[in-house]
Image 1 (cartoon, one colour):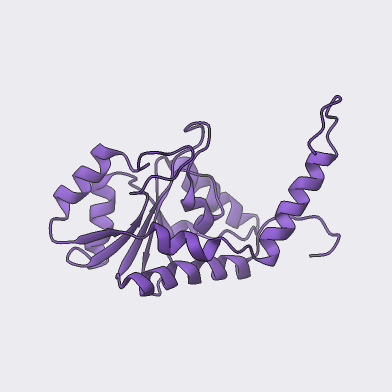
Image 2 (image 1 turned 45 degrees about the vertical axis):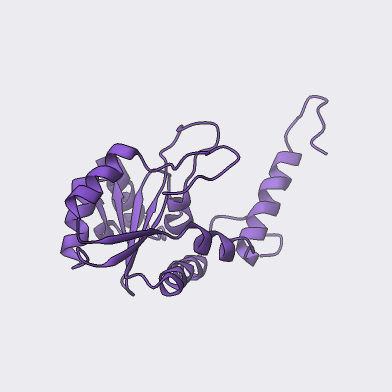
Length: 197
């Protein structure tokens, strides 16, 4: 990426990450993948693997099924309106507005999985495991997940956290460039005598 400013991740980076999602599905022998992320201001260290696949604000549930583009279930209409406006201005969003829908709840997820014909399928889930040092319990809310299990009694859910985290440990060139850019931006701040090094 050279010396130019880092303006965000490319669609090639999106495709690389979506390929990771599909490799997780293949490795775990599941038909779909659910990725749950905490919303903004959720705590000291929000757990947001959804952002890895959406390149968007945290707080969605992303569902991959086969080779189709993922669907993002969101909490409020503002998420979708922002995407519609962004596409009107020619911005490259990772999840197209038509693949976003309200329904970050058990009924919304159950409806989507029924629509995709996955109500009797094996489905991988990211969000069911602890993630120390900040998350010693699963981030998936108990009430939400219990209701999902009640509404989809014939589906088989399995945690795929390990299969997800291992391939994401090695950073891509774009990710390294963003890290370097962010580090350089911090160096440019007036730290008032404090040293970051």
